[in-house]
Length: 88
Image (tube, rainbow, N blue to C red):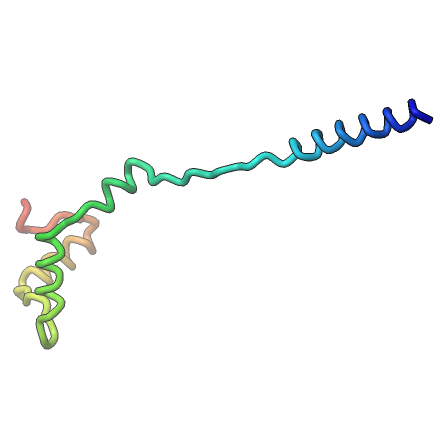
């Protein structure tokens, strides 16, 4: 009887030790990469220019092209030449 109680108590002690060691605490350290750190920097001039352009009222029109450039570009593309006449 005494041997049985001793072995049961030893088994319980060993079991509790094993069970408490089965689930270790895990900590995850999430740090940004070098690229993320560089990308998160401050851009004061860019931000100021962007805000100024965003506040402009009314539509923004595309610059008008000369009619000759439009025809030359179409002509070059139709003949398989992808360079414009201005570059030649």
